[in-house]
Amino acid sequence: MEKTLLLKAEIREHAGSKHAAKVRKEGRIPAIVYGHKEKPVAISLDARNFVERLHSGQRLMDVQIGKKKEKMIVKDLQYDYLGKDIIHADLMRVSVTEMIKVTVPIELKGAVTAKGTHEGGIIEEHADRLEIECKATDIPETIAVSVKEIGVGDALHASDIALPDGVKLLSSPEMLVVTCHLVAAAKTTEQVEDEMPIAPEVISEAKEAEGEEKEASEGKK
Image 1 (spheres, helix red, strand yellow):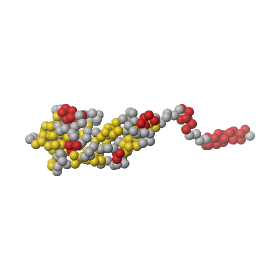
Image 2 (cartoon, helix red, strand yellow; image 1 turned 120 degrees about the vertical axis):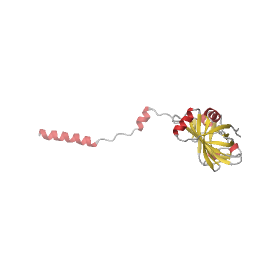
Image 3 (cartoon, rainbow, N blue to C red; image 1 turned 180 degrees about the horizontal axis):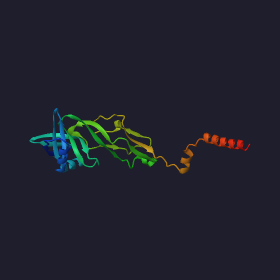
Image 4 (cartoon, rainbow, N blue to C red; image 1 turned 90 degrees about the horizontal axis):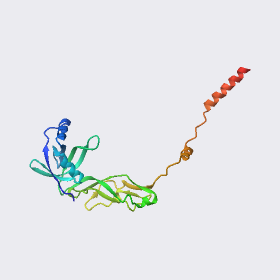
């Protein structure tokens, strides 16, 4: 179960990129609050406080707008062109009893010492997130997936992953998550050359040379 975090928000009276840039210069992050069939509200949050809690894995928080406090989850984050700093956040109102849909990161366990790595194989991750449904208070920070017993030729799909109690899988059960396969051996220069197609005979050039020789022979006559 996630701990809640109280954030005091400020209502943004103006919209637009110029105003948002000004908000960010003041050390705050522009955000939008929506959900529960209420009108969306433009707010700003203290950037340092918000980012620190995100890095600690917290997604459920109490947001105070004026005198009203509501529980919210982070639904989306927008980053700058370098993918480093958060420039905007989308927050959704939730209640502790309702079921919500969220996407949670997958955390592989035992990839380095997996059975397949001792058989000359490597572990390859095909999906790093799962879409799930659960109560707002039961959102897991990550979904732990053990790959210790996966051998060469084995595959792990979304349906094979054990989820915490109260968590329902929404991603396709057939979604490929992890495979283990042999490492392809590097080819030698000789092997590469042997596989190269043989250049076809340039017939036109041969005929041209034959014609020149014939003309030269007739000229001598």
